[in-house]
Image 1 (tube, rainbow, N blue to C red):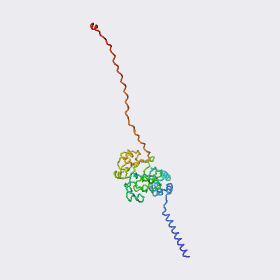
Image 2: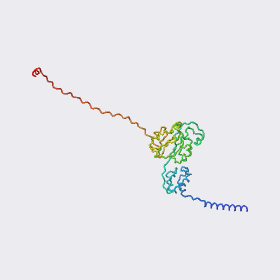
Image 3: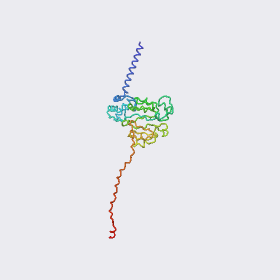
Length: 318
């Protein structure tokens, strides 16, 4: 009995000493967290998507508080919450919210089943990364979408789906939050975050193929061939040609759609524009009829002069 009692006393003393040491350590090494971090985190959507560039909403809240000490939230944006959430964050931190440009994910590939025929039959794991490791995919294009659906699995908001007819992912713009998860997941870097544009309209080169024109045209009927016609047509210098691929700068583009008409391959798409009105051919101009010339007036014959008859007797007298 004494042995058990002694063991209990010893354990109690050890526990008491350990608790005192832990308490002292917690006081000495305590980290005081700014209460504003918790307040900012409460108004965030808690999606923890990483689209803001920080590890979750807690990391973004801490970054906002740190930026607020510098007097500005420039460069800070929650893509899921958008401008309304950033206004709440700015209100908590006593700053003015900076205006942000709404963005949306765009799949820059027009290599549908009709435009980009299959050259092999892939019978394996339906994953873009696995297909890329196995080769170039089911088509001969080494740049286009692989159609494995990795972007669909990465999207937390159900904004992406594979179209069974085209074999390409499609973006639901109402659900897309521009978090960038699909951009990071795509091994071919086919998906890009672009500004939505005025009235949700934008011009995009739906191709990322950087091969020379003949090679690109062989593997896909709707690929950019780097001809440069769009560059010459654009009056705002919004299009550049680099590595045989045209690119439209959304900041310079004025949505005139001249490049769309100039592209011989149909690689430039006008998104969310109303359909073009059919061109009405003007009738050929006909020559106006000449006014009728006035009828010639009849010329009256000169009046007949009276004929005098001279007799023979008058001639003798004369």
